Length: 456
Image 1 (cartoon, rainbow, N blue to C red):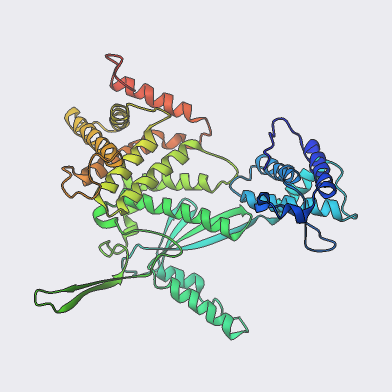
Image 2 (image 1 turned 120 degrees about the vertical axis):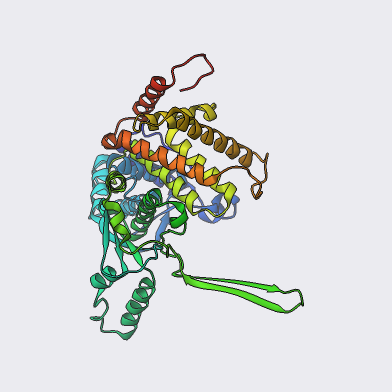
């Protein structure tokens, strides 16, 4: 398929070329002969709203129709509000209507773009998505935890807000479907309530909500150590209950089995665990990351520093939930790399420890020997990460002489230090170059360059 350079083409030119190419395709292409060749793996079409069905339009015409759709997506800031394929589908429908419906007049390309913008805008909807969570501790009363505009709500609160759903349905099978859905949900202890504003369809709302809910659970991992929070997870399809079975033979040859069952999640967490977030450190993390989640809910704008922090925290949470020790190391190292690397292609084992240490020293009055231990842990963790990925050591070896939990602790402190240092600047939409230059200057403040091999 041809690609259109939008820097060289304006809507009027695009619509003109789309019409011309469609006319040329109709006049010159034998569809039957076309389908005898291997070139017709995909032959695009436009709908005919008058006669019904679709009419082949040719790949060149379609490339201009597609370019018009992508122009509207970019112009209106809809990159996160609609899938590109759905915007192209709307463009196809509008083009078909303009071609075949004489009562529907499109004056020029600008008019086409305006009509397409209006049509997509009219389809944008608001949703509040409820996502099951594995945070399994006893519910003694209705409880919620506000995380920005998201809410973590427990089962008793969920029952309150869903009470009576489906009872008004006249059809028995519809009432039964409501019962099935609510029974499935009520097997969980907690849910993430995620408001999504201005998206094209439910599938996209679910996708965005799922990522945001995961970010919120990753916050929990930062506050509650992995010894208690490694089972936390969210999702539409996670199992409500955990059943493990092991079949084996004993010395005498008899078969036996082991079975364990129960709720997945964090049964070791205390009742009223949300009170943890009333203390100073967790409350600050809650406020900053809640603010970050609110900015991620803004589908019209990008916040590079927020995205960097949330993606680093995503790696961190994924590492906490990981069961393989070697993969844990890789994921914790990836969290540090995502947080602290700005396009550099080498020297990570020098750059990352210095940047992490500088962030920590700028917040906390840590003794130099403690900082050196943290830097040594990061260097060793990053070195192990490289050896694991490059095949120098076995990814399943139990003999790696390294404290993964200490690596987790240092990674957690680095994320916290980033938040302490930059929490008030996370609303900036400036290029990440500003963040990179600030961190480099901070490194030079604590680690002045002695020779050219030193990195910032």
